Image (cartoon, rainbow over all chains, first blue to last red; front, side, top):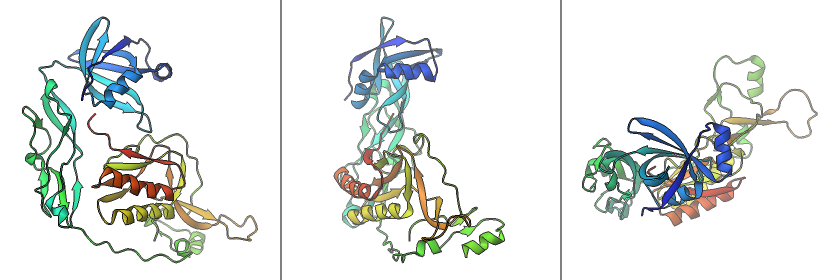
Length: 215
Length: 139
């Protein structure tokens, strides 16, 4: 579900790490807006509002900048090292009737027939690139996998996409596979002190004293 | 047997320092769920193996476990009751260096509650605080 809250943005003149840090400490988020051949604009937005919109799965942001309210497509979000707080957002200017390329998540629905027969479901593609109108961006793709048997795969061309949405991936790329379970032999537990006595092979010329130490 | 490199250029390494946070390897990319470390330090090959075994035993061979750590660094120590000097000790064990934010283990092909339980068991084997994370889709 997308939120339609209007986020107030303020232009920022200073660029660089130091000013961006100062903005973040003041509860603002550095954002850049570009696209459509116009000059890029560096702006700042309240972090809380952007976080709220992202948490609700927003693809677009309604931004009020200099008295004008316009919709922008979220192109890229950079997070901190823990992946919790956004540290920078890229927005692009797009028209509502324009076709855009976006990445959409894939969530498999149902239990595959092959899994009931003792196989293991492996998802190779967690998200994929699609091209569609701004207004038609799907939140997530939910392909049904109940028909998949052991050793069979769901391909990109098998996905039922909403009207007007075109997959940009290779049609023969695998989305998910039901593979047969391979019995893995459990390695024998090593004896105490065994770990230290086994040493990896040396690459290159080995000095005599090193060789003596290794043996 | 615990993990270690097959071939190395040097038998021993200096201890080194771990500065900063994980700027790479800090997102779930292989599976759907992951275990993220919240402290910086060394994780031994035995601890990694214990974590892997804890997850695979809990999952009963369902789903898939991805281990994103490899113990590259040899740690040497001197034998007990040895006087100081006479050179550096022999390699004793191998460790992986982790920085705050790194995703160490990932799980795929299982439900969220199963993944949470499995990764909680893995977290109990780890020497640092960890947390459960999910893959971020789309943007």
